[in-house]
Image (cartoon, rainbow, N blue to C red):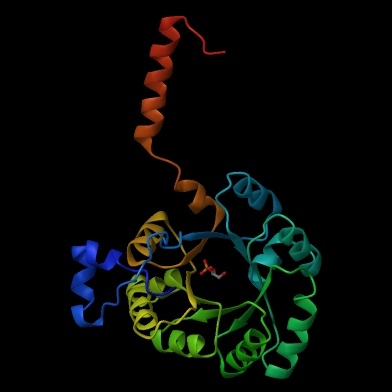
Length: 254
Ligand code: G3P
């Protein structure tokens, strides 16, 4: 069923322009079936931020990388274990070896941290060999540093649980990161790949909006960007006006 649930394509004129009709595959949803909800992961190793987002009940997982671990100043194993205790969802922990054999050894250590550890591997030949080996053993794998739809195709063939295309870094280099997400969505739907598109390197809330319109399965974003989704100037203004008028009534609910 996954990968087939993108009937939203039909509902959006804009999206149709990019999706030739003959390529659209429509879900055959049963009466009690629903499209899966978009998942929200936070891209950080800062415990306080993860706790704050987890308390909203809207957090589905966490992604980390060596740069975020460095930024946290924490011990990798220790902080990863702590993060795994804050969410039931997948927590991506990245291997740092570049060869398959050592990647497997590192993955062995990392997956012992907790059941919800998802091993993150780079999109290289050795990374995909590792991906295939780990997923065939039932371990979740997030393939990171994806910058082309062909790379995403390879990751799906290697059985990746998640593919992480980096939209922000793509934009930074003069490409349109969201075009990449559309291409991957189309390819995965064409072949019914179960690999989930995890939009990474998100810089702003518009990246999240576009991801939802395209039908990406997951987004991972810095805490500030996720918190930004809650905000609207008219919501603040509206609350202010309601509070002022409520005060004038002299009443209280409790
Ligand atoms: O975790 C991978 C990705 O989200 C990194 O983003 O901002 O360093 O390009 P960024």
